[in-house]
Image 1 (tube, rainbow, N blue to C red):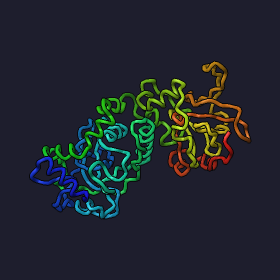
Image 2 (image 1 turned 30 degrees about the vertical axis):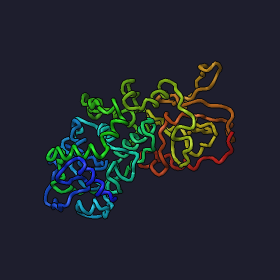
Image 3 (image 1 turned 60 degrees about the vertical axis):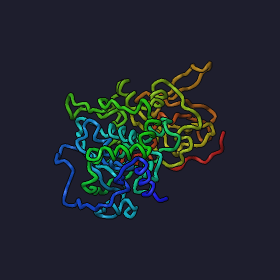
Image 4 (image 1 turned 90 degrees about the vertical axis):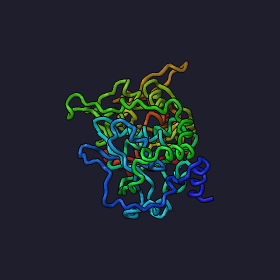
Length: 403
């Protein structure tokens, strides 16, 4: 049974006389001469894909601060594609939604949190009943800030343990967006019965309820930008203060505990602020083998180079030394019926892990760190993210035997 037939069967079972769905439309309405985007220069734009654009459009238009969400196509090579071309997988495009939002009322991070609660980021080959690359999920970033926020949010989601499968949604640069035909716009409003039957039978609602449960509803007030004070002196959120220009210790301001709880995952907060320890062999950087820089998850301050990383066999990312001698500080730790040497970041004072004297040459030290306390920046992204001065200091991990 092909995918279109599967969609039609679902709708027949539901008792519809007119067979309609994201894969079941035959009208080639022209949309080249019309535009559904609001004419407001103050609005910012974000582009997301999460399967059927009817559902994604409906989800975003419920978020406070979103002025308009427009259904369309993105991620392919065909210019001015039609719905029939896209739905047959002929263009490389995926069904997407262009979101126009008021940056004074909602942040990009808030939009990302909304996205996670309306789709499945672990399925790269479609969404629910809609199969094929033309329904693949994606985040199309418009600038470097969106790129970094999307990557950080994806990483936090992957580390949350909420999904049984890996989070694989692609994060790629935005290139073009083509508005879908008029009959696809506001479909959930214009055809409420058909829309509800489709979404229920697609499995989308059931999946979201299972994964998110009581956390499905979001208090979006926490993602409303601060507007008080001098805008020129306003500091960006804790996790983003290093995003545009690397890390500047003179400008960094430690966020409040409340802000940290909002910006960090529970595990990141437990490790960095409550001196916790993540599970061995169950963290993202233990087996990370790419060249790059490890920075503090709170402040973005550089901590370790991949060139000093090695596989210690302990289940945690291990290094023979920090990126420079002043990057970390040592403190005596008597919490485990003995004395250990704790390692904390120099500026943000985040708990990172401990250092031991059973490491390989040339230092004989093993800086045993928590992945949750750090963010990894691949070498190819260092210049763009403001860490260009470290490009020559990062390379492949060390090739040493396990201790």
